[in-house]
View 1 (cartoon, rainbow, N blue to C red):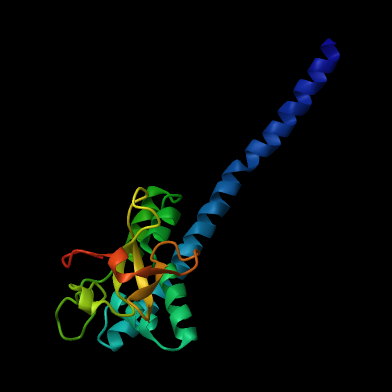
View 2 (view 1 turned 120 degrees about the horizontal axis):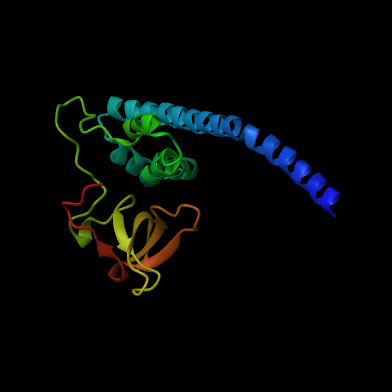
Amino acid sequence: MGATARIIAIVAGLAGGTVFSQAPEFAQQYRQRIGGAIDELRVIVEDFNTQAAEHHLDRQQALSAYAQSSDDFLRDRGVSMQSTIKQDLYKQIAAHLPEADRAKAEEVRASPADVSQQGHTATPSNVPDGWDKVVVGSLVLATEDPLEGWFEATVVELKPDNVLRLQWRHYLDLPPFNRRLEDVALLHPSVKL
């Protein structure tokens, strides 16, 4: 039994040595893949911000323009772009980066304070300050169950009888849903998006 245990220990040691000798290489490749994903997201977000600024819009106003479009393709493209720009995505990716690379990711997440050519900070146009101002593209609060809490949702369609077609802002993989106007809440007008 001593020889068998010795052989098992040697084989286990060789296998463990082989696996652990590759660990630094695996980690390096993983960091490179994450860095590449951030670089690609940076290009997409900067291009979107530039195009929005060319039309005197901030990022949120441009996304609202997509949402208010009567063209299904443009509305879907807006949902896709909002998902791409979503701030939490960058946080999740950046959490896996070394500290030195995290600052690079932070630059992508930061939305420019002033993208208009008129020299003033653009305010969110999709946060209605009254019930009569709720339109397609408005950001409201909705709930599945009051015990679960309230979450941001975008109005994607106004239906008859004060019914709103909504899409969860941060859960774009879930299907749109309907709520009556009296069953949603407005965000405070001074909310920072």
